[in-house]
Each structure stands twice: as C-alpha cells, then as structure tokens.
Image (cartoon, rainbow, N blue to C red):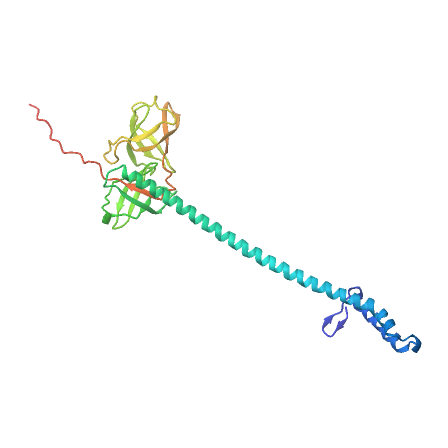
Length: 284
C-alpha cells in the first residue's frame, strides 16, 4: 500500500471510470488542436463530444435518482416509525381502557351485592397484598374511621375471602380463608354434613371433623354454616376438589371459590348478632 498525502491509495479497478473520462477528454483535446483546418467544424466537435456528454449526463441523473431514492427511503422509515409509535400508544390506551372497564365491572358487581345485603356493609378496595406468600394477607382502604372492627367477614361476588384481622385508622388487614390453620364453620350443600374448613394456602383448604365423610361428592358446594358466629350462614366458600384416602381415612381438599390473587373490590359485612348470655336452669 502506497502512502499518498495521508490517504490510502485505491486499486486501479476501483477508479476506472475516472481514467476513462480523462482518457476521452485527452483525445478530444489533442484532436481539437492538431487536426487539419479542413476537418475543423462545429458539427464534428459536437458529434465527437456528444457520447461523452451523454454518458456524463446519465451518470449525473443516476446519482440524482439514487439521492432521491435514499431520501424517499428515509421518509418511509421515519413514517413507519411514527406509525409504530402511534400503534403502541393506541395499544397502551386500549389496555388502560380494558383495565378501567374491568375495574368498573367489578365495582358495579360489588355495589349490586351490597344492595342485596344489609345497609351496614362497606365497600372497600384492595390496595396491597402479600400473595402468594405463605400466610399472605390483604390491605384494604377502609378502617376504624369508617366503622370497621376486628373479625368482620369480608366477601366478594364469588364468595367468602376472609375476615378483618387488624384495623387502623383508614386501612385494615384481611386474613384470607386459605391462611394455614385458620378455621371456619361450614356445611356441604348436597350431603348436609357440617365441619370445619381449615386453610392450606394457594387458594386451597381442607375439610375436617365431618360427621359423615362417605356421602361427600367431588364438586359439591360448600357454604358457611354460621356456627362460628363470625360468618353469616349461606355464603359460598368453595367446592370439593379432591377426596384422598390415606391410612384408612379420607382427606377432603377444597378449591376456594374466589380467586384470592385477583381481588380488587370487596364487601365488609357487619358482625352477626352476638350470642346472648343465658342463665343456667336451677336443678332442684
């Protein structure tokens, strides 16, 4: 490679158009000055120069066309990018509208459920949760200032989700039904057997202390019995998912009806009527 003024020299075959132009113009220059006088005429000069001028004009037109194509391509790419940005913006807007619609539908269902319950029930929104962690709880945006108290039952349109575990001024913590070792009194819709539902995490629970396990059927609905004096009778809790035999005994696992990891709005019910203090009969 030869060093020429700080620039790397190019191979000959990459510069052949320039050499051809120089060669043709050199021949034309020599012809103009050494030709006989009898052969000198404007028509002859023009005829000799026309191919070269046409070739140069064609090269210039091709260069202009390439520049225009590049500009057109840049405009097309810019327009495509703008359209992609608009599509992304519309998709984001559609996603937000979908979320707002789901939120509105959930709130509408809760308000309809509230109309069918007592006037003392309170609608609340889930603002934080620790699901699906072990013993995961919920935080709602209502507290003592709105009249909430510990152990009030909490439901959704799909069924029972838990009870109020602790109360702050404007927020409360909800203990879910599937919390481990937390029980509630229930009964089965078909067999009418009653027992205790105990949480097993991950939206699952287990039925314990049933009077009759033989009559239990897979898919059977389970409702609150009200015997724990926390949840009113007749609230849907879940469905029998599996009956497993272990060591001669049956274990009954329950799929809870509400999706506890997808809650947005809940309804807090008032306490059931307290039990009266009854006097014991005097035995004589």
